[in-house]
Amino acid sequence: MDGYIKNVNLDETGPHNREAIGRVSLTWEPSDVVKTNARLDLGRMRNDGIFSTEMLNCPPDAAFGPARGACARYLAASGGEVDDRINGISAANPSFFNYNYLEAAQSTTIGIGSHNLVLTTGYFDHDYDLLNDVMPVPTAMGGSVVGTTQGAAARFQENYHQFSQELRIQSPTGGTLEYLIGGYFAHSKLGIESYLGSYFAPLGAAATGVYTATTPVASHVINSEKARTLSAFASATIRPFEALRINLGLRYSTVRKTAHRLAEAGTAESVPGPDNFSAAPSSVQTILMDALAVDIGEFARTRRTDDKLMPTIGLQYDLAPDIMAYATYTKGFKAGGFSAFVSKSIFDPETVDAYEVGLKSSFFDRRLTLNLAAFLSDYQNLQETTTILTSTGASRQIVGNIADSRSKGIEFGSVLRVADGVTLTADLAWLDARYRNYHDAPCTGLQSLAAPVCTQDLSGKRRAFAPKWSGNIGASLEQPVSSDIYARLDANIYFTSSYFQQPPADPYLSQSSNEDRRPHRPGSEGPALGPRCRRQESDQPPNRQLPPTGRQFTGHVPGARRSHPVDRLSAFVEDVGAA
Image (cartoon, one colour):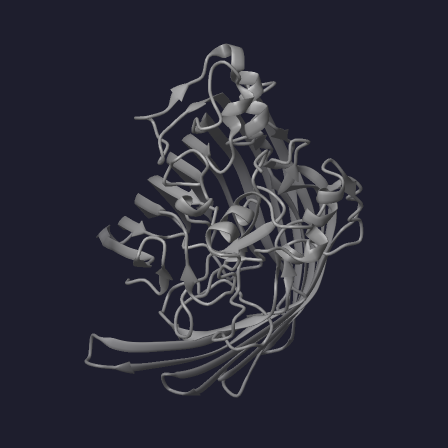
């Protein structure tokens, strides 16, 4: 894909994506009682200019005071005025995202009398190399104060692989009692190296006698993690009489994780990486890591094991041949873990009690389907990533158990089959997701400007990425081209109301309303829900949050307009310790 953002700094259009994805699948039936389905997926992606950041709010609003740091330097170099509008024009520094993956899976079903033994095996491996620069200021015009071609260079190199095996025995279906019992095993290994070059500030001046104000200071963090998951599960469906089904389930999981980290400060070139990073002397490591807002040292403990017994119960009752009412309760669990990158925090498991009631129905010989559901989910020890500002003004991301929360809502879905090959769909959801006891939440950018180290009470406030309204309207046309080939076209409109992009409920980091209207390829998940009913061609495309690195001006990375996906990444950016 050729780019749609004009980069006046690099004199090119981006992003420029070159992607290739392939699949091979196989079905084998050596006998009447054995059947195997297998597939292999391969992907290779090379994307340049992937983060074409546009600047906003330079100069900042009056409440933030006069322009400082990179914004002030940019204004001075540009004669007092810079482009800080969302208009498809960027002055960002170079960025790229290179990704390779391999995914293989097979499922074998073996008939054993009236039962089936199902063996499912999976393997996944990926690696990527990413360079991002959230400083939307050309380095020659104030984005860098150390002579580099990057201002706030973030380089991530990751490799991950996982092997999984599941075994289950299934009873015959359609009787008074149906059941299955099984087990699951998974082992994964994750390795990440991250390099963060803070070239927009003269951090080298903090290491007097070793470095100078023009030294390009960077951090280097190595994270590794091994995880093993063991699960045993069983479920049953009981039919006391024809119209009623009682669904019971029980699952026990234990997750063991072992993690290590190494973090160090030093110097690097414009694009930091393993071939040019040099560690600083031990005498200045603490000083530099404080300035970079990176934790030093190993995790306080390097191994943890979490386990949980998770029951499920549900009732289904047929009010009529094509109308079914249901109610369910499920206990959910997410294991604890270890933070990556700048933080060495360790977080505990998250659990949820989820309740749902609803109706599923069809009419007119199943040409019209109408579904309605109401749900309530209570989360305990909610795991969430948030950004805090240190006493030096630097920002850092922390993963932790921040609060309890409650999400409740109503969902409506409909499908109308107008004619053979012509289908219309419509979905609408109302969501109320709020923190229940978040007393020490991080502050907004403006609050932090007044008091660099502060907290606020977000109890009762809406959660981030939780729009009140969301939905989509779609149409699908499928027609035969020949006896073996079908042509299909899907078109969808996705919309949401506005929402915050980070827990602090910062109005400068919120997604305003919008709409994403575009053709949609069959079989994909569709675009991320993009906000309240407004045309995508407007000047406020949807966005996703980037980790802030300060608190004065903001930047965003827009996606393609009109018939393309829209994506925007926003970030507060400010020099740390720079004039």
